[in-house]
Length: 578
Image (cartoon, rainbow, N blue to C red; front, top):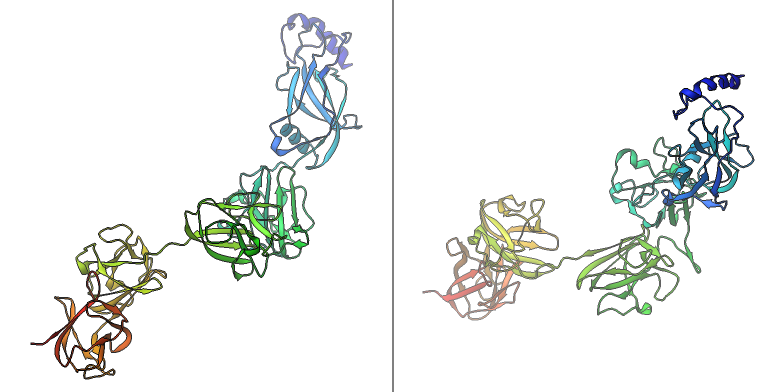
């Protein structure tokens, strides 16, 4: 009845609105010969796996001849792509509209189709047998016409953005919940891989960056995958949706594939070896310096085991160095290198998933640290400490030629000066140059390369103005002051080897001086504080720290001096008293 009434209106309205392209245009009489759209570029009926990486790529380009609907009435034909499951007679269809109503072609992208499917109740990472037709219509109250039906099959994907980088953390790992220490995965297209330790009944999650950024921190949680292994579960901790590892504690290959929305966690086996996280021995092999064997697995150099899965070694590395790590002194089933191929990203890969570690070392010495348990390695340059240093400061008028410091071994150096509350000092590493100065460290008593002036009165071992031994330990980064009073002891003087003849410090000449009566025979030395912790001997021209005994100058009284604040060396004089 509705169509008959509408037809009566058309007879009058067609003359008024015949040129108007609008839905409000009255329909043509039902006697018109309407013809549905005819597809000229047929639908690809092969099975298609939709991938996140191809979301902007065309799944199909449909083209058709225009439908004939109420010809001559000036009505605009609208087209829509209708999709439903095969055999459902389009009872639960959804539509993809054409971009403009007059076009007879549409490009359906992978992302568009996948988004429409997920929005209409189809699950991610599922395969569906579907069918498609093109609908042509001019008004909701008038019949539409359709193209033929075309079957096709697609597999959907879970629409989670593929991250630029991906990191792993959690209490199931070795690094805990610190985002800044989270473990770097290896990216290959949309797939991220890491070999590392996981602990049973603990939790983990992935991050896009090594810092916490609010809601994005939970983008790559349990809900970000459609396919999960049987050794993880949802930890059920509110919005975090962390993964709970339910497998046995061990060393696993973890692979997060955001193109197929699949997470896999599995052991890695090569030959007879199933990789784990702790070994008794680890060896380095390769071409990394001129001293060690060249790619000789049988003579690979043993590393030092520090703790469970952790090994270190110090090696000089040349430019173009290449090396890897072995679990045995042979080309066996256990070896580790740079994950994914040659390079130096700091992430370990086992055999069948690694390449050589490559590095330009510049012939410097490095600590090479391998953490199998964590799945990482690192190279840290070992700073070459200066072997000769000098004292500079207010104590010598900031003369950057410097004052002599004795090298005591093990990067420890000692010098001697009168210090008061205003004294400031630093360490010269090159004479007549201010380059590379060492100075105050972060805390009192500490020293550091590039530090500021060391204020003597601020040191924990400073007490009152006086003459001090200043001992610098470059390796441990410390400075220690010891008050010093010098005396002469030995069989060549009255006190023998038990009692010192004390000297006095001359603040003007900055030398220790006094008169000592020597015997005709015997030996003597200088020492500090009536103790053998600090002593001096050798020759008068070159006094040495803890040097050998000095021979008596002969019977008589002598004026004796000891200069411990010279520019070139320590020295002494013994002159017969007048």
